[in-house]
Image (cartoon, rainbow, N blue to C red; front, side):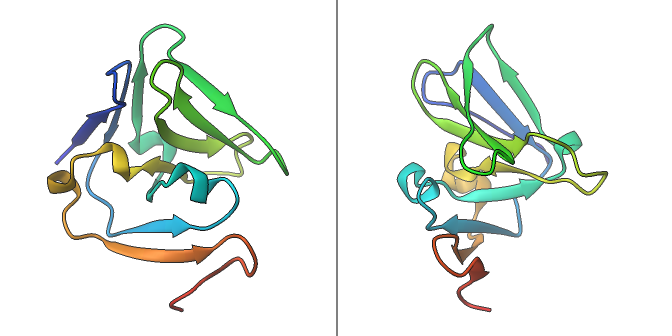
Length: 122
């Protein structure tokens, strides 16, 4: 069952094939500011539709991923890899863009991206 949502103003639409089994709450310097809950998908599973130049990207640090947000309302919709590493690449979709009833009672995994780079409950 495809799930579809938009940023706050509706200029960016994101569709995924299903709710994730779990999402990641990361405490790194950027994710804690975004407040995102990341659901991971293969890039070919995610459809992002944006009006004209509705999206902006932000790249920093090791320049491996690009965070994408709406240029109008500022909502962070997803992040993707700058350079592909192969068929098993993943991208992250901000599941906070979706209505809670679309996502359900998904398990939240806490990831220490600030210090240890490990999931805290593992």
